[in-house]
Amino acid sequence: MRILIFKYLAEQNVATSLTDIENAFDKSERTTLYRTLKTFEENGVVHTIDDGSGVTKYALCEENCRCDVESDLHLHFHCSQCNETVCLTNHKIPQINLPEGYLAEDVNLVVKGICEKCNRI
Amino acid sequence: MRILIFKYLAEQNVATSLTDIENAFDKSERTTLYRTLKTFEENGVVHTIDDGSGVTKYALCEENCRCDVESDLHLHFHCSQCNETVCLTNHKIPQINLPEGYLAEDVNLVVKGICEKCNRI
DNA sequence: AATTTAATGCACTACAATTGCAATGCTATG
DNA sequence: CATAGCATTGCAATTGTAGTGCATTAAATT
Image 1: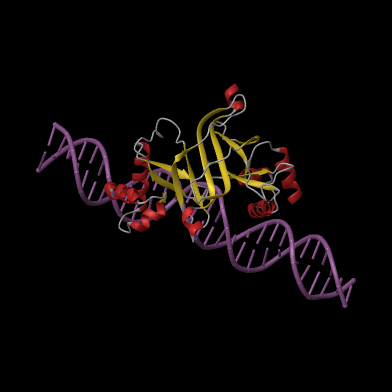
Image 2: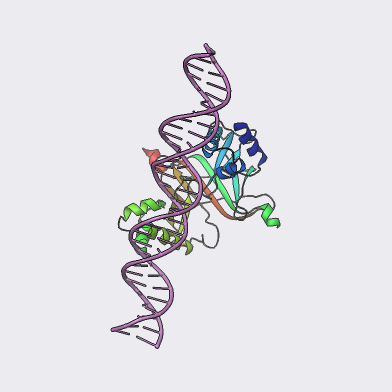
């Protein structure tokens, strides 16, 4: 089952919500998926994305992803038209200057707009 | 009632969740607050922040805030210790380079870590 | 084979977000 | 002043996601 989930995620090139996965496998249970994804996350296989749509989405980590040891530094793009979220892994988050006394541990950067696919139509 | 809510928000220097406001006014209803805030948001009085805590937070827009006409460009800091979210209105979001074909409409940048207050303790 | 451990499925809870509808209050106009 | 129309508020209920508890099944270890 975990392997199936992994494969499914590998096929997607966009971040996928729990419900999406659930619909893809109408065999399996939400709980299983939920816990599987949690396990994946703990072991640095996937990372979660909060794209502001109110639903947590999941995406496989890249080969050299180090989101388990340091913050996940690439940005995400959420299309307000097709509602898809893509990882722009090549677009790193620029250095953020914080005021004195603030200590950054993690950075979440989500850009909303129209994705390339919808823009073409 | 709306004026009371506005005043309350003006007193806060951190972004405030619906529940926070609800507790502050144990007279009023969630629905009223909810709709009031929605009205405020539509009219550019407040902006909502998704700081990743799973709860939408609200903060008054600045004097010269133009988040109704263009994206709200300042960043937010969410303290993982005291759980407060502050608007770092002086810290603008740097220009983001997107791949060809992508059109940005809004940018949401939340930095998580330890805030100045908690860091001092 | 028996015992232990991991994985799965079902049922349920918790909480934020949201909506429908009725009741109330306010305003404008005849 | 009456009343019709609209905005605001309150209550109840619904939706949807996240998460937990427990029993059952599958797998691994001895």
